Image 1: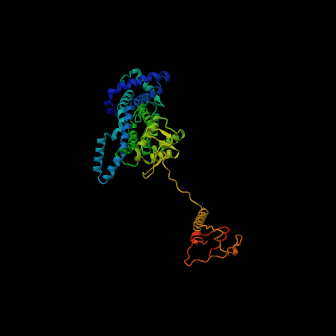
Image 2: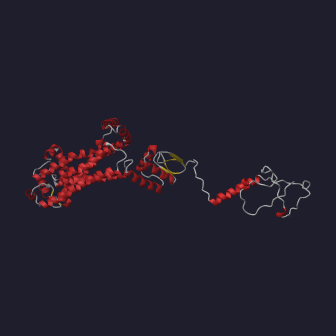
Length: 441
């Protein structure tokens, strides 16, 4: 470790100068020889470095998004060359080269801050051995050696012997307990950061080398830091624990507000966005408009979470527009089903409605009414004048029993004016029967 740290000795002077500047500020508050003054100086160094690395972090996010847009192409390559792993890897590398993406871009923040990490290790190792380094003079060196963090000296290590720890004014038990707790916290935070990336912010429908890389880092980094952590001074453990906490918080913010399409984080984000847009009937922030605009632009390529989001807006009468706004009106909207088919609603388009199911009594009454109507059409009324009436015609007030039924034709058919109906036309008639009119002979 000392050999590696010596390779970055050219930046030990800037790193030591930053620490001294922060120490001069915190020393006035907590005292120049306290662990709070030196510990917060290291924490402030981490924050300053991470702020300077934000452009790299943004580049990392963009590169990750570019990798995600290649997921469909990667899936096609995997299906085409599923039996030839070598050809599959060659086609993947060719795709990366053509699109200008790099799967290793997720390691940029770690690689960029590695020189500062080793430079800080070089500074703290000089404090432990009693050597002035950078801008740290003899008085600052003595002050740093007196600083203790929870009873452990700033420059003490887990592997130090009792004599060396005693020279720094501490006990071996305090040093090992404090360093062991910090190593566990450092490894746990590193593992949790990678795990939440794999479980919440990755589209698991496509298996890519990028996913395999992230899965490997999820297990390799915690083990690596746990192994090397026993050789880190307490000040370096403070540095790395701080940067892990920063990374974890930064990643949680990105996962919550800018999730990967097709991931569980996107499903949770779109559910929150749907409730917010339904409540306010519009998108308020530029980030929300950008998300809605991207979903609308995808069209039939939307995933199941995005289709569910669009359909839920349509159900409450809202329409997602191409510019990212969500309005309430009669504009035409496209609703996608799970099988990819589209249904157009709104904009005056006729809505398909299913006919209402009738009850049994309604069907029977409708059948009877239809039969009565048909029977009425088959019985045309004949108006007879007085001169046309037969001499033996009965009076109008004759009882139905006195009327004689007309003879049934031989063919069994119905003739106009006969007053008879077929059972197929009349059906069953309910209620009182109408008196039969006399037949004309």
